[in-house]
Amino acid sequence: MIKVTAVEHGSIAEELGILPGTELLSVNGRELEDFLDWEFLTADDEFLLHVRQPDGEEIEYDIGRPLHEPLGVSLEPPRIRRCANRCDFCFVDGLPEGLRDVLYIRDDDYRLSFRYGNFATLTNLKPWDVQRIIEYRLSPLYVSVHATDPVIRRWLLRNPAAPDVLAQLREFAGHGIQFHTQVVMSPGVNDGAVLEQTLTDLWGMGDSVLNVSVVPVGLTEFSKHDRCREPTVAECRAAVATVERWSERALTERGKHWAYGADELYLRAALPLPPASAYEGFEQVENGVGSVRWLQQQVLEGADQLRQWQGKRIGVCTGTSMGMLMPELLAPLRQASGAEFELIVLENTLFGPTVTTAGLLPGQAFLEALRTRDDLDLALLPGEAVNDDGLFLDDMSIAELAASVPVQVLLSKTFVDAAPEPAAA
Ligand code: SF4
Image (cartoon, rainbow, N blue to C red; front, side):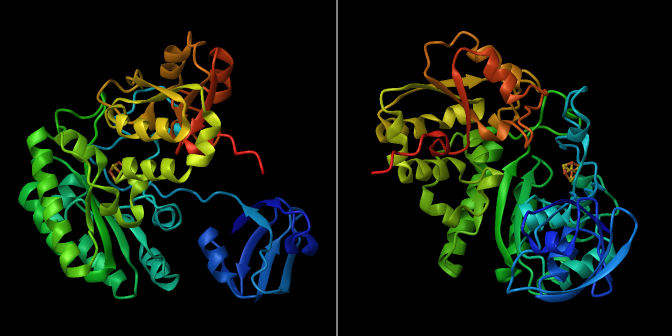
């Protein structure tokens, strides 16, 4: 059963009398569990829909609709699948106490992997889930492989019951499902020869594995430092060398780079980032793979809009890792806009200085940095630092921050998204 939370005005659902609170029970006699069932079972233009109205009345609708016209209902969010693992490097374990409850949820949900590109380990799949992935052909999936050696992977995930991921991937691949994969690299565990084997195994799966990224493990002040550590410069360089060797091979044999190192891996290795052309379509940009090159492209493409900032003095707030890469972005930004940009690099006051990602900065860090900055026309904040409700990780809201500093603040993911639209000619 899925509950309707809203009905669009003038939609088919409104015409039928479906209301907020209506329970969608089944389609063509098949019970509905979540948004996946809803989307896949109602893909045809004719179907039988069985609902229970808020007053308890059950109704069956024989629906025939014009080609692909949406029914116009919003559904309650799915109950998130919890993770069955206990990775030593888990970010949730690295959280300080006292944050909002939702942040302590370890999610590992193949549905969100398909829909939003969240990485999932596939260690909590029930036979029914496997069936659905195949039946609905949920492709591509984003899979945290980490290591293809089952023993090492179980160690990394701290899950002795974790199934053999290669066998899982092969089964799905046999039904036409493809994967974006990642290896979170924990030094001394899944780098070196283990990484080589993992890449060899994934390569052996042919076109089913669309790409693989290698991301260095990231720890906070509160992580389990007695059990895992961050990689050294030499370890990151070795991983970059492995990735680039595979990338060259893939380009020669399959015409695509295929293996990528996260920006963070290059940063830690103190090596220059590959050019934009090495990232083909930026398929894992949300995973921090090619983010800087992608942003540079956005700046070039949005030059007209950025010119609206001409003559302004703009502060760019970011974390320490992006702070190191930001000069590569600020030069084209200055050129495109004619504005002055000041880089404001913030240390993470919530998780400790080892957490360098801009998206994990708390509201308080921005407040401290901007409290007296009335000399700026505008301050840009990383858009990913707030959730859908406009809250930073420390529960400060963007509105609260904006009211407490003497400069206009705007959230931005691409710079261009914060610049005013040019006036129509
Ligand atoms: S898979 Fe590991 S890192 Fe991810 S949520 Fe589960 S325990 Fe944490």
